[in-house]
Length: 58
Image: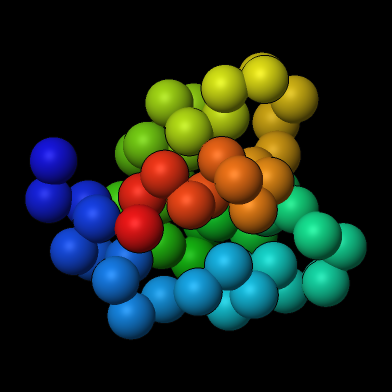
């Protein structure tokens, strides 16, 4: 999957706009590739990406 290259220079904090420690679906909207793989990364299905879940793309 080429998505890892797309996120190589992007860190978790740059998506976590409100600083609550998770990336919500609305925060993910700034990056179309992240939107496309959001559900795959959200392994616990809570509608948010934790740092651990997000780290799978890096």
